[in-house]
Length: 115
Image (cartoon, rainbow, N blue to C red; front, side, top):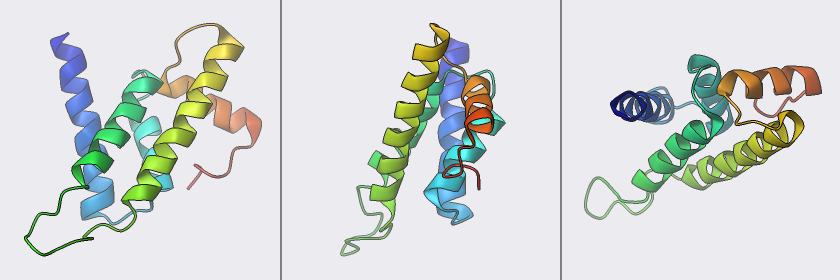
């Protein structure tokens, strides 16, 4: 379990870095986290995206209402990733990894997350 928690923390850090420090588009961050953690379960990636988006709900500084206006897009991308996770799991009849999701995107011609 400790390894899973460490992996989740690494994934969240990867997402936060892409969104906050590198100012990447949320869909690029989804593609990046899926490719960077191929052995992680897809649900872990969706959780990391959602956790970071939830963290961005709270302003860092007082009187700073909307310091990350694209957080809603991050939530939307997490939901779209969840749909792809479901598709992969239905097609393969097993829990999906990020590698399986990336392969699914490659085979299906997915372009939204291919940034």
